[in-house]
Length: 170
Ligand code: RP5
Image 1 (cartoon, rainbow, N blue to C red):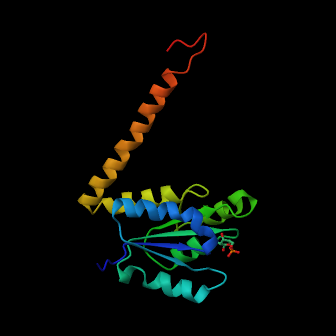
Image 2 (tube, rainbow, N blue to C red):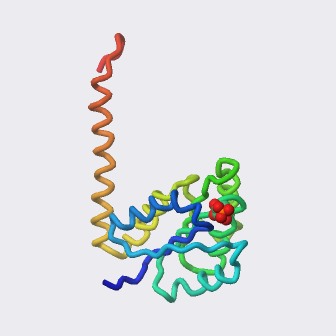
């Protein structure tokens, strides 16, 4: 079955893959076709430009860009495409604080929607929320995912009900 990707996951290095797998798994679960490639703003700048300028014409709707250290990749991509870019700071050095600031502190006019350090799952969830606006079937699958989140808290409360303390009243 040939599927055209709607999301492009870009990472600065294959060393980012253990984190970015969570995004890929979520797209599989949501049945969203995606592509996954490595590009580097510092190591392959010409290829980054080619990718960013051509992504919309290829049918890509959202770009997720992950990078660690001096993480220029998401911002550089955002500068060369009208598509929404979601940035994932990777915790390779300085606990990811370096990448977080590099990705989130974009100048006015060129945003990168930055998720938490190593927040690959939330990047994919945000991408699905954006695409759900124009895709009712995807919106329905996403709604099921949301309802399961509250199941987790229901279970947490039933577990906590079993925890006994002398002065605990419930
Ligand atoms: C960044 O530098 C990558 O996104 C990665 O997080 C970090 C280290 O890259 P490698 O040396 O592991 O290739 O560009």
